[in-house]
Structure formats: C-alpha cells, structure tokens
Image (cartoon, rainbow, N blue to C red; front, side, top):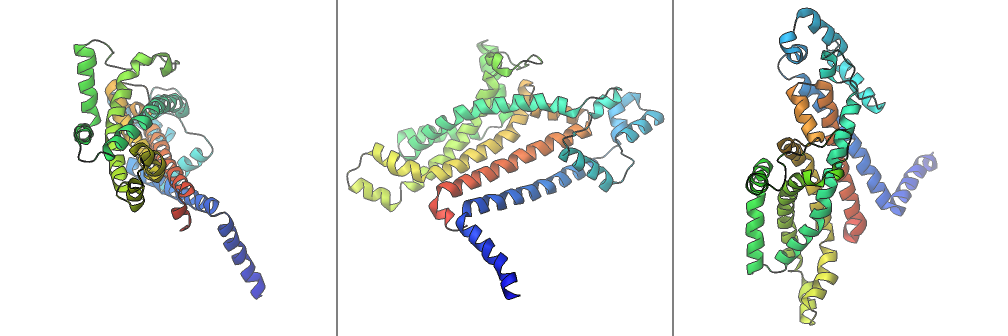
Length: 340
C-alpha cells in the first residue's frame, strides 16, 4: 500500500525536477484560466447590475410594453442570473458569441463575432506598429539615460519623458491633432478606415494614433528602463569591468544589456498591457475602427452582449501577456529558474 501511494508522488516530483519550466508554464496557464473564469463572472455581474432596464434603454422612444417583452425574451433577460451566465459562458466556449443587442432592436440578427472580429484585427495591427517602434525607441532612451545618470542628456530625456507620461492619452492626441492638422495640415484628424480595407493600405491615417500611443508608452517605458539600467550599473561586476579598463560600449553590450533583459521583458509586457487600455481612448479620439472604439459605441447604445464579449477578450489578452512575460523571464534567468 505504501508503494502505491508514494509512486505517483515520486513521479510528480521527478517530472517537476526534469522539466521545471514546463511545469511552471503549466501552473501559470491553469492560474490564468481560473483568473479569466473569475473575470468573466465579474464582467457579467457588473453589466447586469447597471441601473435601468436594458430593453427600455436600447429601444429608447420606441419603447412599449410589447416590444420590451419581446427584447427581454430574445435576450433571455427573464431568466435567472446563473442561467444567463451559464448560457453566456457555454456560448463563449463553443465559439458562439451571440447576436448584437442593438441589431435585435432593429429586427436583424447581427453576429457579434462579425462586428468584433474586424475591429480586433484593426486594433492588433495598430498595436503591432506601435510595438515595432516602441522596442528600439525605449531601449535607446532607457540605456542612454540610465548609463549617464545625472548628466545633461539624462536630464533632458528624464524631463521630457516625465512631462509626456504625465499627460493623458486624449490630451496628447488632441495636441497632435492641433499641431499636425490645424496648424500644418499634414494628416487628417480622424482615422476612418474604409470598411473591408486594411489599415496598412492607408498609412497616412495611422500616423496620429500611432504617434499618440508611441509617445505615451515610450515615455513611461523609458523611465522604467532607465531605473533598471541605473541599478545594474551599480553592481560589483560592472565596477570590476570598469577597473579592468573595459570600454563603456563593451560594458553595456556584454554586461548591462544581458542583465537588464528580464526587466526589459517586464517593461515590454507592462506597455503591451497599457496598450489594451490606452488603445480604447486613442481609438475613440481618432475614430479609429478598432476594438476600443467599438467598445465605446457598444456602451453608448447599451449593447450588453457586445460589451461582455469585448471586455472578456481584453481580459484574456491581459492575462495572456502576463503569462508569456513570466515564462520568458523564468526561461532566460537562471537565478529565477532555480526557485520554481
């Protein structure tokens, strides 16, 4: 009996010892799934407890008892909360995102997936452009500033990035519109991509939203990386390298950057997560047809199904970024790997 109960325990310990990174990744994925499940419950409950009758708000002046009853029946609003949540959750797991509430009011069956899919693709394309520019810009600003702490260049970069990071996204976007449209007339103040076309086919419409997101995210990321670089440069091995006569370029390339890689990944993950929230505001400012702008529109017309789907997608992206960043940090840092 002792052998039977002890064997699985030894096997589990052996597997964890042999593949610690895989075991850690598995635990993080399980924790992420549980977190997402809790998030869907919170999202569902928050939307359900909003004041006012959904059917009456959506119908507006066309509201009457018969139409309200029809909408309530179509949206299953007469069912209990657990029943409605279970229907929502099973629909998500089956890939059925349901129909738009606003579409039901107009008497048409409009699939939420048909609305959210293109909007999500547009947002990912916008975020991809920002991240491609963000990574080298943040590395240059952070390393240059952090390796020259107290100098004139450091003061200039720190002051500029502090001023930009203190401004909200909508204000930065408004200033850029005033500068590049009102004063210079270079770019359009809105980024209305024609339906069915890729944003890459209209690069002039992407300049202002990309620049807005890039300025705010790079300013904040550069400040975080500067602090990390400045801390690494105080370590004993950096001092030893300097005493041995190594050049500043060699110290940065051979000792600084490898040891600042983990903080850099964490900063990158934070900025991608920032984009999830910041992109909602920026898309609304420039009327860019992305997931953020679609969420604002759904909230304005109280499209319950669309709001739940979009917020769940954003939560899943946020959690996934956290998991990927954590696993990458463990994979590249031997000191962290020995503790898992």
